[in-house]
Image 1 (cartoon, rainbow, N blue to C red):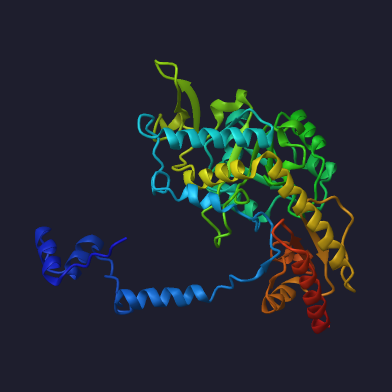
Image 2: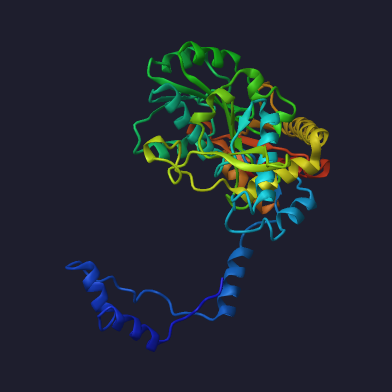
Length: 446
């Protein structure tokens, strides 16, 4: 965006128009008896070239050339080049997502196709036009459950992502919602869950696969939630759903998840994409926008926003959310990715990721001192190291590898555990290189 500076004369004219002589006088009128803030610590202005070079130097300090084995909700998948070509078109690439049906049929059709793809992926009947990211989608699902049940207690399995748990705590801080977390076990415990359920439980939340990479059978969780009169919510990794039984078939009431793996690059935390799907009977309690297909007077297909129960559109007390965007460009990327990869292509991506993860686990378990539990997993798994995993990760970066996610960051009792993720993008040579480097680092640590 262009930078338009003001001259001293222009500043004087503006101050004169509002009846003050200078900036200190303006501050005094604004702040009253409060002290005027000092701006003397700010650095002097720089030229455009100097600022550009400074920012480029900062960016160059980031390690962008590492071989990535980090997962925990965000994954380094291949993205077809055509995704960038489609989403870079000027009709789509805008700071605002237009919804006026008379002018925005392309955008509305893309949203409709995205919703349809999410429904097929999750095995559910209706999806909204997307949300900010996986964590906020999970929060919106909790509030949807609160509206559906008129209860205020949300029970999370301890195997739900700590990142998402922290986001839920942040969003619920000033709300009358009680968050309860079961003990963090690699496989859910029915007695632990039963102890957390109460007559005021609005929902039970599970992650699929869970934060430890384990694929669990959640049918008992769903049944326990149903017996308690609570809503069952599944936060699912979308690529895994190409192989695993989808949340809808398992019996979940609401499915959410982080859509970054659907054609959105890893970008230091965003922008990403949250998806949400549910059954048609719940649609009136669903947040955000929903795009529908209709016909005009001449019988031609047309696309419109069927529901948009935001506080900007209806009475605040009846609004389902105050969410202000649906991350339209990211949803478009997801739709383009799923279109170009195709149904069988998505299955192939999932199978390759799973097979390469099995190969990587076999290679890494050959290193003396490394152990792992025998649990079913999709494309990421936990290794127990003989030393602190965070120290190992730091040393592996020096060797060109982002070796995984140190679980001790969120689970203090798991300081020696490393979560390793493998996608279809990783080669056998990179996996073997990881194993060689990791063995050398462990030898150094001893």
